[in-house]
Image 1: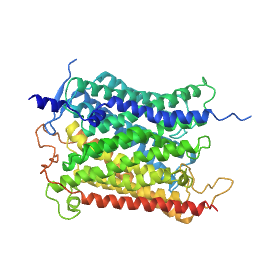
Image 2: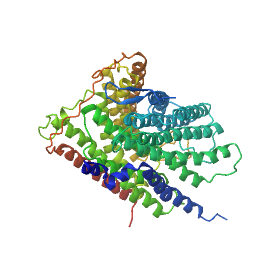
Image 3: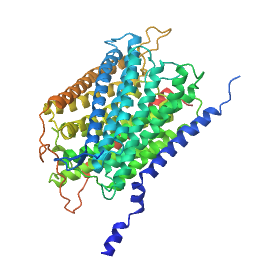
Image 4: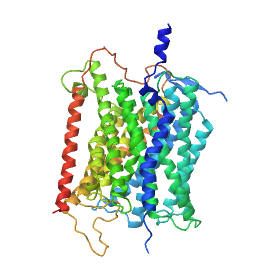
Length: 51
Length: 555
């Protein structure tokens, strides 16, 4: 009985990761915002103004 | 207020009445949007077809703006929010976390879409879907965008809150289902997307009223495409979730490997939004490093995810069919599939056209070098009509033929016509997008009212073959419009006049999941199809490099 409960509680790491929707949410925000938005905006902002 | 539930006699799912009502209103708004956008599509088609050239320039750009907004934004996002109310509360057997917020979100989306449509029809927003500054529309056009984005964000947040409620109230055991996981992926992408929309349109709205003096055009384009392209990636993700659902409903398929499928969704979460950079590949202010990282290294991981789904969904269908005894040779499982079921037809056409046409062209045009011969040509709308229309819209149409009996509890009227509708729409879009993409290969520009530039200072030469393919585009477009019109008619008539379906098991035919015999079931037919796809991909990709080398002579 105790073994069964122990087996039930053991969730594989990958499954625990996929089950954590809010961790995925954070990753889903950080990756595109850093690589696409912030990097892109910094490049545009760093262009010197025409004189 | 206590939540009121009913148990669906056909699926056994516990259905919260608020979820059901929210699904209905969002689906109705989506169908209205496709009706409006479809009328505009016909006008745009009959203008871009040189043999007809129906509208004058002003009305053409107005119709094109109206078409883009209603199809790419309203139809798709209303339907996606409806899918979230299904994938969250209904599949998890939970109550909607915030029903009132759900209604406020819907009201904001409806108000926003009406404001935008009114602004366009008044002639105050002939700025097209991209609405690039410094082109200026009336202020209520931008306000409409903000209201719509905030309303959709509330719908997305309601989905996440419902996940929390379902977990806290233990309405399910173990992990959420794959369809709900796909819905969560779409919701995550939607959150980033809609936030970009709200961020860019608030200063633009203030600019339209004169409170802000200047909006940097380059920055606008960058942040806009953080909305414009990912709004189509929400579609892709929701479409894939619908593929898994339709495979279950039509042939009783279950995912062949949950880990692989969820990993593919994870790749979407991380990388699919980087594809926005495709639109800026010819913008000089961004470095090659930014362009190549986003459109190649990062984006290809999302493409890998699409190819994984493109294999696992047909594989799950093959396994289900073989377990039913249809296991002769490579393709008995496919030949004896339920081709008369409109939802199955929509599923197969959606996967095939999305992969072979939309996917292959998208990756090829997204390569920085090849992009230079496809950017701003008709090849680009040819690509996205293959993904958004042939892929997403067709999958959503297929799902509608289950939403009507299961949510409205009305029978679909004229089921044979519904089957014809799925084929007419799918084949029509295939011919239309094929003609469009090929005409674009002859450098026919996108968006422009006149292929020949008749009123311009000089007229660039147009190859005669381009006119042939524009004609092909026109004929395919008419067939697709017929399919789209039939979809609206069948859906509306079914919802209002369809025969009421009794709450007894079996009244709605749903495929049973076949028994797992414990023996290995091959997916050899799917593997053959996968290699055919890969061969087509390689041939098209290298053909484009050949065309590039013919145009851009490097010594």
